[in-house]
Length: 136
Image (tube, rainbow, N blue to C red; front, side, top):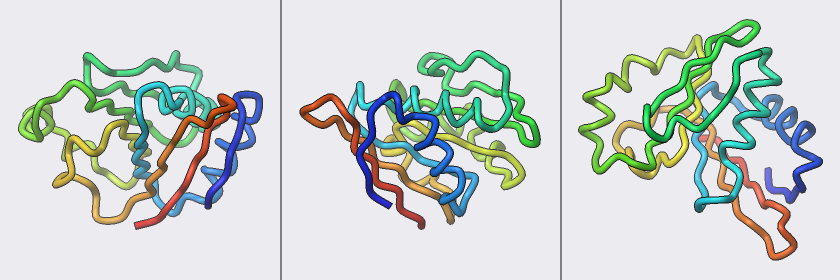
């Protein structure tokens, strides 16, 4: 799936992602400012969470309660190597009963789940976003 969207389309795009994704492990790639956390906020809301969603840049992981699932939101931007992810017990969160959203998965290439949905975000000249969704 490939598309472009504006911020006012966010609910529709997040709904489409939840319908299209074949995995509860969703990896979000894109440069700083492309809207990874903003998109995750909308996904968490659609999954029935009333929690305040923010980027876990310093804590590495935030946990939210959804309507039917727990949601784990990782941001690996600040880690230096995969050892930090191991040390915080990242692999313990990989339970297919729960949603796992990962920002900056490029920082942990050897820890990606076997099956996952990958979302690549980009910023367009008109300030819209481009999104591609691929299944692995």
